[in-house]
Image 1 (cartoon, rainbow, N blue to C red):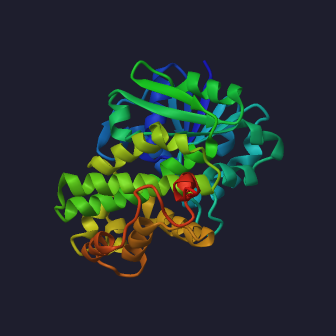
Image 2 (tube, rainbow, N blue to C red; image 1 turned 135 degrees about the vertical axis):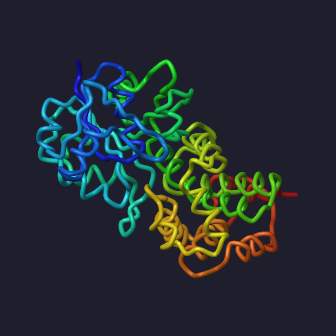
Image 3 (cartoon, one colour; image 1 turned 180 degrees about the vertical axis):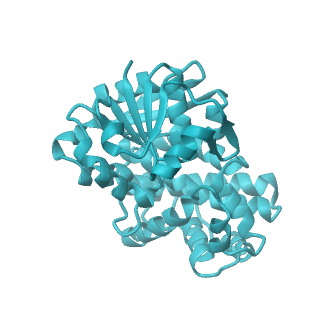
Length: 350
C-alpha cells in the first residue's frame, strides 16, 4: 500500500486525500497545528459545503512533517499560492530523493511573480527538481469528493513523473491526462481566476449570457497572449487546463473567485468579502501579478487592467464594464505585443 502525503487542509487538498485513500493508498494529511489535526481527525473533514463524518481507516491527519513524509511516494502541495514557499521550506528536509512533488495550487507568487513549480524548485534540493509536476484543470473540490465525473491534467517535464501521478490519481470518475507544458498548465489554472472574478461581476450586474460569453471568450484570448509571452504553448489554453478550467470557474457558484466577483457588485470591499470566506480567492493576488507582468512586457490586457483597478484602485464593477464596452477595438485576434496572433498584423505587399 503506497503512502501519499497531502500538504494543506484546503478543500482541494482534502478532496485529493479522500480520492487517494479511496484507492487503497495510505494517506497522511499534513495540518498546520496539532489542534487542527485533532479536530479534523475526530470530527471528519469539513470544507466548502461537504462533510465526511467517517474518516477512511487509511487516512490520517497529523501536524508532524517528519512523520507525514517518512516513506512517502508522493507529496501533493494543496496550499494557497502565497504560502507555498513557506510550506515547501518547512518540509524540504524531509523529502526523499525519489518522492514525486506535485503542486495543486492555482496562483502566482506576489513579489517574485513566479509560478508555483518555480517556487518549489527554489526551495528544494536541486537534485529533486526533475520530480516536480503540477495538477490543474476544471476541478471544483466539492464535485470531485462527491464522485461526480471530472478530468484533470498532470504536467511534468519527465514522462515517468507525470505517468506515476496519473496512475495514483485516476479513478472511474476522474480521468487524468498527462502533459509536458508545465508553464501553460500552471498559467491556465492561475490566470483563469482573474476572468472568473469578472464573470462573477457580470452575473452580479445582471448582464446576461451574451455579455458573459463575450467576456469569457475575450478573457481566454487575453490569458493566452500572456501565457505565450511567458513561454507557454498556445494550444494548452484550448484544453482542460485552459478553456476547461475557465468554463468551470466562470460558471459555477462553487467557485470562490466567481463568488468574490458577485459580492463586489454589492458594494462590499475585498477585505470584507475575504473576512467571511472559508477559502482563498486566488484571483485577487493573481490579478496583481498578471498586471505587473503585462506592464513589464508592454502587453495589452484590458480585462486584467480593469479587474486590477476594481480590486486595488476603487473602480466600481459597473464602471469597469462600461470602460471595456466603450474602448476602441480592432481585429478580434490582435492586441499590442500579442505574439500569439502576430501573423495577423502582417500587411500583404502589393
